[in-house]
Image (cartoon, rainbow, N blue to C red):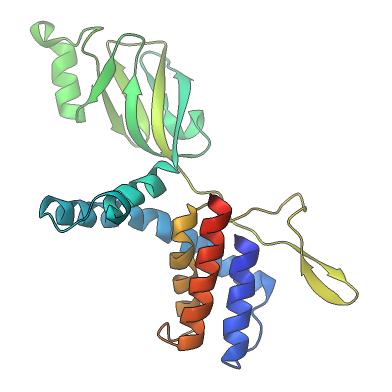
Length: 229
């Protein structure tokens, strides 16, 4: 997708007589765009769920909240991690950790509580969590589980991979090269391609209502959807 995005950007900026965006400039801009798109998914999903609760959504293909949920689930992963004295730093244990979704022990799913509740439950004998009803808390990316376990399975939202467009010179012309070792495609769900293009164009002050820009972006969006099938 990143090569298609670069071609679209070049086509639109050239049409606007703004010149071609350099690969280095493109790479520096696309990184925060991907991070922003990932961060906005949760807020947009919440808004769409509110609309759905007001019966302003439509079923099947019109289920926007359901479609956006798939874009969020694109970043869901799971990993079994080892704990020491019932705790572990998830940043150190999971390279691409972003946020916790759920925690499972061998016996059950642990319920998330805040640190105060965790300490109260752990220190009052009559309220001690059990193997069938464990709890966990998360502070500064350190997870604590009670009763203490040696390992747990963590379902989490991962960080988006840092995109990087690579190129080489062929016959004195820059050619984009997706076979390079440091190449990294856009780590977003295909339905978010339009968002990436919109945000990228906004960096250059391009009017998104421009007819040429709208036609080209619509065409690229269709191509990405076909490839994703």
